[in-house]
Length: 88
Image (cartoon, rainbow, N blue to C red; front, side, top):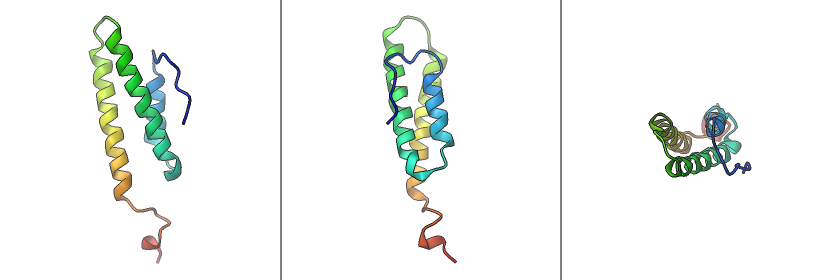
């Protein structure tokens, strides 16, 4: 698991989200999703503690969490391409 800084101000969670979304290696995908989810949760907590209106970022975080959940579930349903099921 990648080290997550204590403050996630700025685009850091977006970088981890993008890395998970673009990961092609099935062996690394689970770890990338976990890193991104942790960063999103930490950023949500950070936004909860600070004043101000962060509606756009909160909405983006919610969308990212939903997408990561869907990505994780989709990976469970798709067999590996190198499995015997795809052999000719």
